[in-house]
Image (cartoon, rainbow, N blue to C red; front, side, top):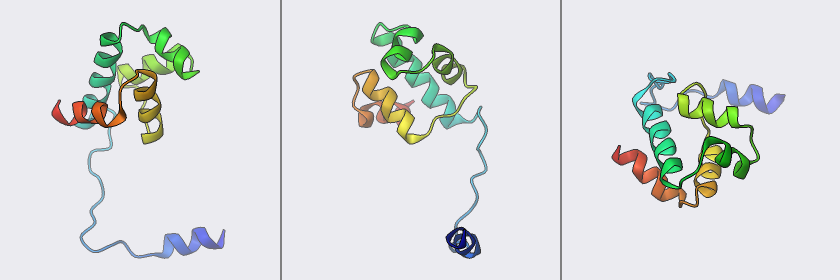
Length: 97
């Protein structure tokens, strides 16, 4: 608990601004879900197939692709690996979207 209190007491780094676009409908989130869905279809996988490779329920993949659920970096890497695409390549597709 003491470490948490210490961390919270740290001042914000100069020039660091809060992220303004954290919404599920933001440009970058839309790019991520579009690329994931397109890559899944390119691999001839259904949402159920991808979920099976990930050990997740199909509804999780459906919510991700529908933009109802955000991903963290670890999940993005897991999805890339399940799609048999290098995470760097998948992220490059997001940046070019």
